Length: 362
Ligand code: UDP
Image 1 (cartoon, rainbow, N blue to C red):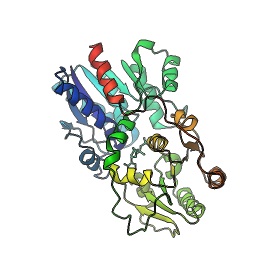
Image 2: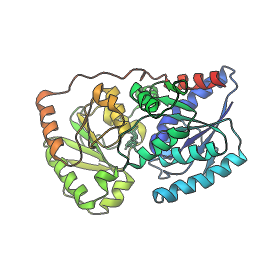
Image 3: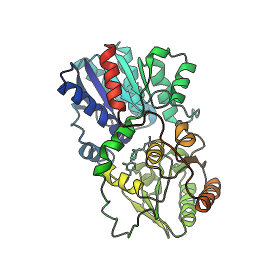
């Protein structure tokens, strides 16, 4: 079986790493399975791409489509044009896409139009917010995939509601958590740990990159100043996403607690998360990792496509703007962490389950 694996953006790289390891394990056991890795080039900044390949030991891509930035449509179209050529030159039995970025949707459409089967890893999640580009990517990808690998039974239900037949849906768990477990004993102090005099469980991690939080310069600046004040005696480590950096520009804000740093590699970032007091973010992936690590996470969004992080895990939605965060954070300071657990099948073995299923169905 020949699989073409697609990855385009930071969270994709984290998700494909354990899938490739699971394929290589099967190859070593003699299974007839091979893969070709295609990097679309959606994220090309070293800190969002190369660093992850190096740290997670992901093999160099067989092909890089080098599409780079562009508007939603320009980028999607560029990926489609280049990926069609890729598939014409390199045939395969199955295209495997992960997550919900433009590369996920664009490559699924191209493959399906060429009558190639598509497997979607992290299928079925829905925020219900169609203004998010990711939600459109999820809906389109799930409307044409052949194999649906899900992280939760909520995702299964969403797919069933869309009329996907039960046999195509496989609840396997979370590949992002495979990567977390595979690397927990490799996490490493970031270079600035001593310089910033960081102490265990006494600093906050902040990440923001979603349009609803960062696209308007004035409100972004105000939000950061408000978070700076809310942190009172705690340092706030803020790895600034290139998207957010472009909006903030060179202007230096006068922070008391916030320390802006470059986007971190996976190993340093996980070290920071694991040892933090709390996390404030608008990332979906981080709300999953904090759930597994038992770190309180406050998500600056009105909705989530990952309800299990809220209902079982440590995630609390605090909406957009500072008001609700202020209230919820102050009650967290008073009452401490709430009880939480780890969602079913988030056990580090998801990628192996996926490859087993693919091998047995072909
Ligand atoms: N991440 C990282 N370094 C950082 C910020 C995030 O390694 O400085 C990792 C994080 O742990 C998570 C993933 O990147 O695994 C999430 O990526 P992102 O926030 O870009 O995507 P989203 O979760 O919003 O789809």
